[in-house]
Image (cartoon, rainbow over all chains, first blue to last red; front, top):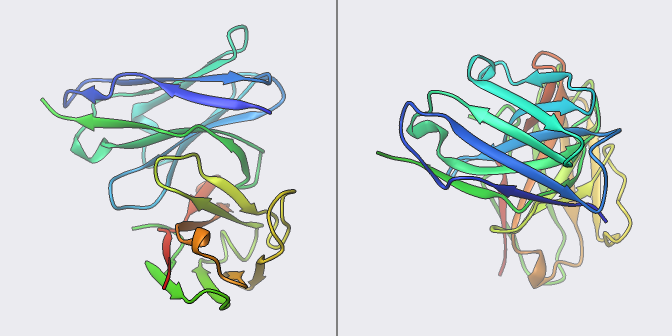
Length: 118
Length: 110
């Protein structure tokens, strides 16, 4: 069974770049779509973007100007970079495995809390 | 403000049947499959219902989903204490070209 684990700094300063890694074990990053999803405190889930194993990406229009998602299939990892963060970017960040054209995520990491503060 | 609208809370007593609604629009629920996730804080969300009304293996048949027009519902029958947690609906949105979620419903078993 595939297992996803997020990792990265839990504290980011305002205006800096948030960088997270999702490591996939028990399965390959090929032939699936890999997403980042976040949940701000007290709010609902928000899709950030996804990447195909080919490297093709799609981002939420509300975050597109600040987001980059990349993948390293040789390491079974994919990555999130969110630039110019503000307090509004504080959230639990999840990585998830999904399918194209549908909101189906069959495997999720347990999430990592990112705080934005100087 | 989430794209899909869910009631923030729902409640029921053990053994009761409860439903959680999810309201959307033509660009999401009306045009695409609806999914439901169960989320215990601090853990990975779990896919509960896919393609409107299908259950992944291992999900009890106490959980069922339905969709009509721009709305969907999750029904939980034979309510148990372990069902007390958060539930989220989701659907692909043709305008966003990506998935959108509801704000989540916290279910309390009284």
